[in-house]
Length: 298
Image 1 (cartoon, rainbow, N blue to C red):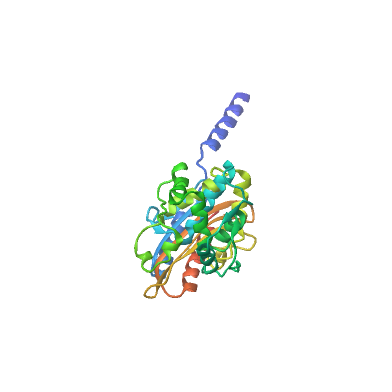
Image 2 (cartoon, rainbow, N blue to C red; image 1 turned 45 degrees about the horizontal axis):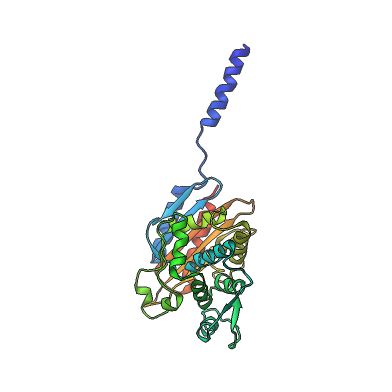
């Protein structure tokens, strides 16, 4: 009898360990809802969702390249902080600024009160402007500081990430017709991979990881996008991107590491391109995506 009882226990344990892990994302629900959101938006909607705890993922247009717009400032910040980690730079190091640099920083889409006679600015301050305020001028100064476009793309090759490319400075991106070229792009899958490596501490030291995530939490742009679709008590470390409106159509992006009230984390990348209507309507599309993704997460 004791042997039979022992066998029964062993079999029950074997069955328990043989059961597949429960998926965290309701994929049929997500696919249905996101396809409906995309149709209603009138544009092209790329989405990547990844549950950090379970490793479960869902993608809409997974490998389609979308223009990153200001989402491309995230890898710039990573490249800068990698040089901080290696000792090539320090956060309090002063970076010399030309008159053109200062003008570009002051005239960014988010107004900046940097004095016109400024001669230098710390790496820390330039990073805060780039991530928290999405300042184009400071992003270009940092790109130059770390060694140019090639140094930014090295972030992807060093981390074995395919599907992201940086081609131009932001000064070039703001020129008329720049949005007509499919450059400076990323796929939903690639951005999720980059965010996951950041979250797992595989791209930066713990201190630099915390520095960047803190800035992403403090970002003042895109408050009506991913942030608007999450429950109270949810933390969102994110970076947005916004394209120019042409013939009544525009683009809006937001990528984030979302921490739910229970501590579980979800990585979310949302790209909306060539969508008609107002900027607030495009923001509502991104909020609807984040709402659907969190609803579909167990």
